[in-house]
Image (cartoon, rainbow, N blue to C red; front, side, top):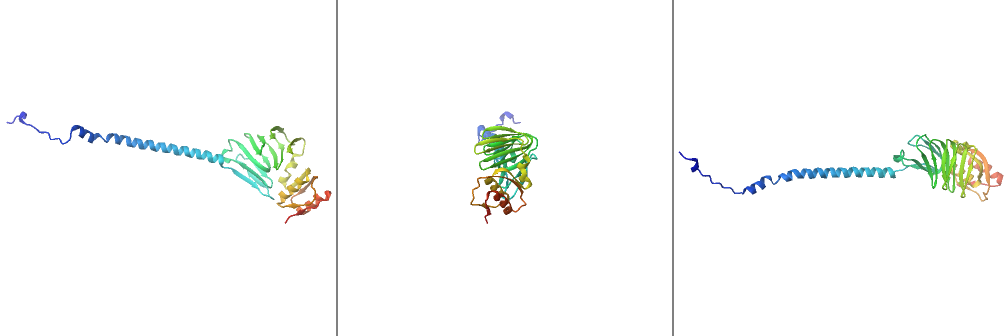
Length: 261
């Protein structure tokens, strides 16, 4: 019988135990770290993409502007996001930022517009350096060339003209022209929006302004060789023929007008 002590097994390792260990377990770190790196990269790019989208959205909201224009010879009505309404006279333009509206109810006006404002946060109308601020009211703004005027029909408005603040209540009007600010009280404010009913209403208006308004409302050009250094009062319907109106206006001053073809 063979004794176990007599049995000898000769080990024939071609690789050392260190080499075997490295071969079997060397990839363990790679298996664990690669997915982690991939996950970190994925979230990093995802967060960066979200931030980029937010920045782009804010930039778009700040830049995008809605514009409403009334061309010569026409009026244009518009509704604002809060339900306020605006009617623009001929050759007028209104701009506002719809995506920032409920943060700041503000419009920019060039020309003339009649506003009926819904009650809410402060509403602002800017024309150059001049500004009207209201809460809920109706008013007319005229901003052409060097003349600026605001007429309050209902409610109360705060007007900033040439860095001066004025509070207007119904039937009051603030006018800035030739560097002078004038405040008129107890006027017939409805006359200031006669144009919304397609009527010309002039009370002691420079004749040059009368002619310009007729040009705007009819979309025509008027010529004369006479001096227009006069003031005119009168009212007409836009349904009248423009040549007839020009004759009525010119007769008291001996002035002849013609429409350029």
